[in-house]
Length: 179
Image (cartoon, rainbow, N blue to C red; front, side, top):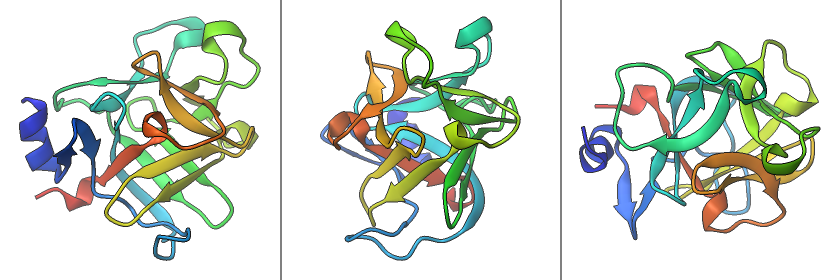
């Protein structure tokens, strides 16, 4: 299945070469009130027009690294996440590993601030602010370092940006919105 077919299947729109998945509303100046609760879905990166995947075949410090790399729909669930919107913070959990996504703030060098699906409990590194603008893009911000998640090096996700640009924009599609 190619990305154009996936876009029709998931309800995405392709504009200027970017994924714009159906946004989950959240509170901000240009959004509706944020719902609370959990749902299963996909995260698509605008920067490279690919779905986010948890790298479960990597070992050691790279296990569970989040990368925007998938160009086709998969039968498996490496690209599926449970996103929980709460009143104080939001969480993202990989359905494939049953582990929460964390921002690796103690890592240095090329792995600094990378996102990994590696935690079995929720602590400060697993707390995010997911904000979706109505009919537009979503942002994901790590509350541990107050930085937006970016698609770096074409695929790796890192909580490393203080501003919102193309690389900090994502689409989030709820699984229950599929036709």
